[in-house]
Image 1 (cartoon, rainbow, N blue to C red):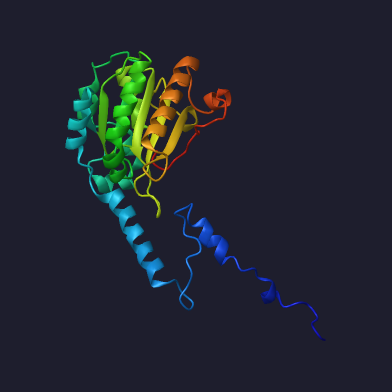
Image 2 (cartoon, rainbow, N blue to C red):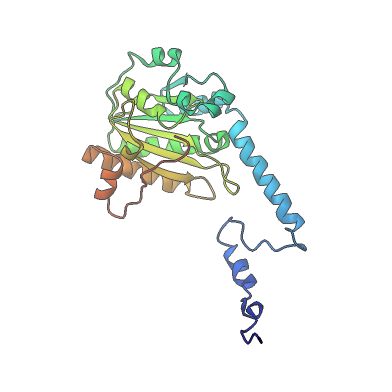
Length: 266
């Protein structure tokens, strides 16, 4: 029987020009071209380099000393603690330990309750490069904005081997109304330096992720520091005004510019 159907191959559109245009607006891997049946050498080398940067972001330890000094120079009172994860390997294998303070860390924070409006917390999370590159300028801008609202600020707590939920225990110990955790997010192959900001009203151990809000992708090639600081400041203002965070606050927030979250850094 004769097949009178048109050749499907003749109907495949040429999209190379459109993809080249889109590549100007995104770091996503589109329109890479090919060499024979595989990728070009350039695309392969770029992939390997990005993969190496992502692995380094996860595994290279964060140097907290210059961060502490920088925050103190901005006027913050700084406290450094560790979680129950004894090293990076255990931290990656046991996420639960990254959500609990070490005995020494808990003892250090006990008795330091300031009953403040906001406690700021920074943890290395899953990207040391995100914290190293973005924390200091973001903290400086946030301090100006939060103090302009006449909010009382607790100590800035730096956490080694921390997950998002470590802010619950810290916030509870310090009796803070609002905890804001700045943490390195899981790196992707186009973004190894992304910082996330997680806000929790009346943090307590066992708080569900649906009771948090997140502003993510804070980095030079993503959400710029100035814009991120304004969004975090606005989020803090809404949280304190409505005495809530999470899904419930999103439903009250025009435009819903913040996200409820289940990010892997938790």
